[in-house]
Image (cartoon, rainbow, N blue to C red; front, side, top):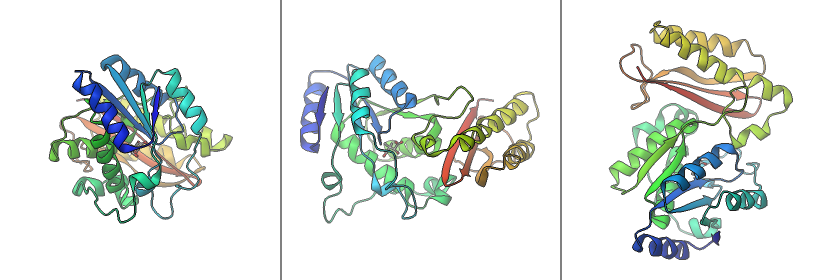
Length: 282
Ligand code: PAF
């Protein structure tokens, strides 16, 4: 595995592979790798000649009161995991080469970035789109891999790829879950034992609502109520940002089911914000 820290070198290395007709699969990460990330790497390896990963904790996507400083960093283990998964190229830039002094260009996705999590994390999706566009320009991947857990992230990146004519296939991979259903996330490491148990209510409420819809009760309001009730019964969930039924393309809350629907939840367990979703194909 080649570890590269300088954008120009990563760009030249990837370009050499592309010129030889090799496809490049790309898995961007912020490190603290778990099985969810590894599943993206495995998928990329099965679909491409070369797999590139990146590790960069992107300060631009964290709000001033968010967890940038305490975000889990485990660089030695991350490198080992990437190597074990036979990643070919690991791009691990320093902050100063990504955002040098006087950096001032941002990618604003528009309306989509203000929905769902965007309402509670202003600027977050501008930060994500800006770093992902920079990484895309450096790696020039054929395909890029993202997990469905961050559903809004996948929608905004697809929109950016379309609007800005990136010639990249965005591949969305299934959420990888713990045995009790909790979606894998680097932030799960913040939870103490009791909070960790309580957090399983997120997937339980999504499953209940999804089962209800699949059984023919196609009333979004009822599905929303059921989710909110299940969440409210869990004392360690300290806040609910949202839990409802959405249009998976516009991310608007829906009042009538027609076509595919997204059930999505964002809650606070103590100081940890957790999100999850289930997509139902109708
Ligand atoms: O999903 C993440 O880990 C990050 O948002 C990403 C896509 C690596 C951009 O920093």
